[in-house]
Length: 139
Length: 139
Length: 139
Image 1 (cartoon, each protein chain N blue to C red):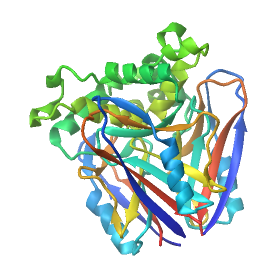
Image 2: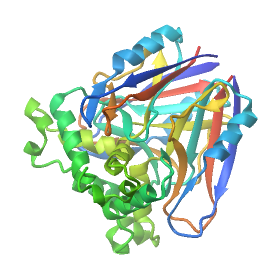
Image 3: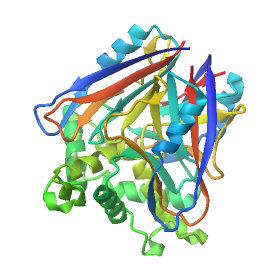
Image 4: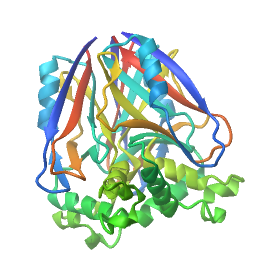
């Protein structure tokens, strides 16, 4: 069994952002030389998500609106977590809805994707460096 | 390390549907000959979900109601994504809530499940052929 | 390829509870002797969740409030599932939101975590023994 582990770092300009990281993950798979296996991609912080969706601007706005309706950033006092001095209570909830990680099949040395699948890093509490782990195992 | 990859295709008669695919996944695990490992099952389209729940009709209605309340199909104009000419903005959100994939342990050559765990393919934008990937790795 | 499978049992005093199980999962990884691989941790019951978040009391209350707002326990008659004689319709929905499982990278023999990542077992229908599966595969 072979494995490869890489860490990607993102520092978004805005508090919330949605970044298509598919090609970066593909590069790790290629570098690993693994032909058949599984690729785990996960946010290493608990106020960010890795998930798979379509890369379409309108959809990204829809998702952001949906999350902000369910778990709004303000009022800050809405979240008990924010009594610790943080203002990211909403971000923890948003990430819980969207999920921490994806596991993608690697087949014939490539991410085995349907036609519209793209991997997104979703930042809900950005403007500082945060990491994503990519691990490929297989043969 | 051994691996096996199969693709299942579903074409639902209704726009939304919930199909128990457990026995199909079990067949792939058996065919693979893998005794200890992991089995990934994921929707290959971004308007469908693979998730695990109880196979109980009332519960499936409850889940469908819950999703339709949170992200209703209509009005179509509610979703910016639908300005592209699609009418599936809701389906992208519904699938984000329910999740794209499950990873199931394979132990002694079988899906290592609790008493009520069943794998469902949840279609949120059906009436055309759509695929599910099953990949087993292990030994 | 090596693998190790263990089952953890939890019997919570309250109907809903959130238990940090990180050290128990770490023990399984250590015992497995696996240095590079993947670790699956999943609830074996469909009214409980395994997810990763920060171990902060206020946040746990926020998550519980959020789930109870979206899918309240009462009225029992709100859920068709409860017509079977159960009262756990809400618990199935809560778990669908929070997710069944996590997959964690094992690197250099340890769970490869960001600074705040902690694994939680979230019980939504407790007061009886329920199981969590931990499976590590790798080398």
